[in-house]
Amino acid sequence: MTTETEAGTTPPHSFPSRRFTDRSAQTRAAILAAARGRFAADGYEKATIRAIAADAGIDPSMVIRYYGSKAELFEASAAVDLALREIRAAEPEQLAEDYARTFIARWEGGANDVEQLLIRTALTHHDAVQQVQRIFDEQIKPPIVAALADDPDAELRAALVMTQTLGLAICRYLLGLDPIASADPATLERAVRDAVRMHLTRSMRDDA
Amino acid sequence: MTTETEAGTTPPHSFPSRRFTDRSAQTRAAILAAARGRFAADGYEKATIRAIAADAGIDPSMVIRYYGSKAELFEASAAVDLALREIRAAEPEQLAEDYARTFIARWEGGANDVEQLLIRTALTHHDAVQQVQRIFDEQIKPPIVAALADDPDAELRAALVMTQTLGLAICRYLLGLDPIASADPATLERAVRDAVRMHLTRSMRDDA
Image (cartoon, rainbow over all chains, first blue to last red; front, side):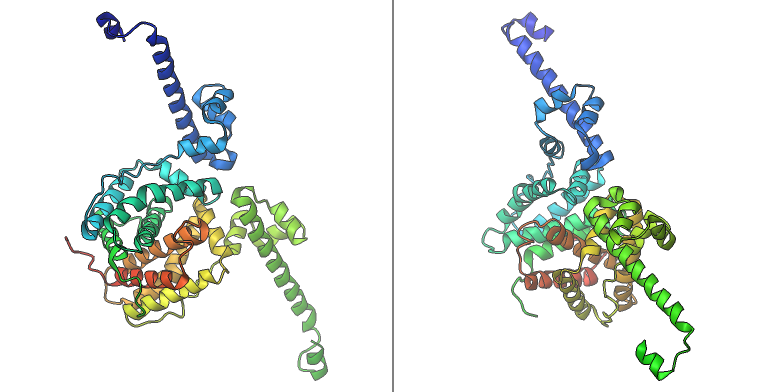
């Protein structure tokens, strides 16, 4: 800001409001970080606005002012971006490979506190289920439906892909079940790739 | 018992002990039913021995006498028999078909309160995770390993089968995510069959 003042490119009266906005963004970020920590440690039920506010070093009324309610605060703090937008493969083979690589890289990267929180919470609270449904509808389904444009079963195929990847994430990263937990990531990436490809390409109407 | 007394085939002194055993079995069953209800309704953390005893109409000390602790009571009340023992297919194709039929029939049959309780609890309490691991080791793995006798990857294949079926169970029956929740069971049975077959037969070492 010192630089801008010296350059004289910004009218002085804009500073207070921009500084307020910066502070507001910082406060929101602090609230969300505290909320994630509390929801993860105490569970949705036991986490209180009061405890979250204390962790963020602010008054509980500020949490309500910014996020309205515990349910809305949870929704904001469990917002997940699966980074699947980049997947724009034109055919199932490549889509399966890209999908598996993105999925395994993301979970192996360890930046999955928010997904883990959301999955655990969804199994006990309906509000969180709707958030998982939105993630499917808005992030998982679109790239798959786009790649299978003429397939009337595209949405169900996308959903079956989700059952496989969610099941693997839960067994390996949330429950730590062996031998899935001890398998090497490259082996799992190939398994996910083959499973995704199978769900995208298998005949849905056979009677074998 | 009247019949036996009239027939004179059982010495009279055995009656009190058998009747005591019957009563004990009834009490245990009542405790387990109450425990399942409480664990499901209140969650593992909040369910108390006191509340469970009250629901069963007995003294809390009786619950401790029969089951020792809340952790042991949970273990007993979440004992699951997946009925996979019957699956003794000699080759993967048939195993996949039998597995899918057994899995879908069991979950569609709606007698899955205990599995649902176990899955939900496992995502928040480590004791329950060990129980899920035992179910894999003792019930899911053996028939698959038996059918894939010479395959060094048989255990990992079995685990991948579990990731698919657990993921489907969670998406459809626990979370109710669409369009998995609204798909017809026959369609899902074919999807599970094809996924199981794929996990049992795909090359594990390719570099495609």
